[in-house]
Image (cartoon, rainbow, N blue to C red; front, side):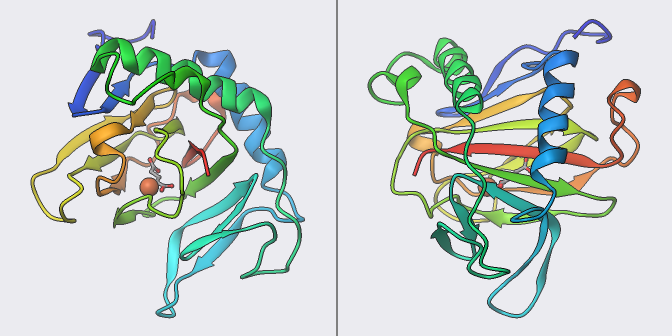
Length: 221
Ligand SMILES: O=C(O)CCC(=O)C(=O)O
Ligand SMILES: [Fe+2]
């Protein structure tokens, strides 16, 4: 990005886990945020997720293509009002495939198996982090597909903690994700534990007009 003091290079954080800084330019960030604001409206809009143990996630969420609930996918908001989930937009799948093609340039042609750029992405989870929201260490393991997960970040910078498939503890790496960054994890890291221990309130680019952080993770079922 043009306002970087030092350029942040693309980096492989763990085998098959690639940070792509500045993947979305200002215009693409604004377009994705505008779409998130439309998707956040009811029906099947932004909601507070209740965990089976009775607690609530501090991150508010919505789904596209398939509705995620703890722990599975459904066609309707089965743990809420029962509405059909909003469709997954084809352009978002194209953005994800394009990020995977870039990740392959960093991590190597074989890391995600064959033809990573042709993955039929059909699900997105949109996460909204207000001040103080966080996401505990978890694996994205409710999908049947082993296609790489692609995440796009908007707004406040966060610390993205990326560990191993073996357990939620160390070793892990803490990667700052800024507005416009993408992060791709697949291959040997597809089921790695990851989470967001904190965001930096007020760190969003001033021009974006967002207080908080939005993350969009694109997945194949
Ligand atoms: O907010 C993030 O960067 C990560 C989100 C995440 O891990 C998820 O939605 O499963
Ligand atoms: Fe996740």
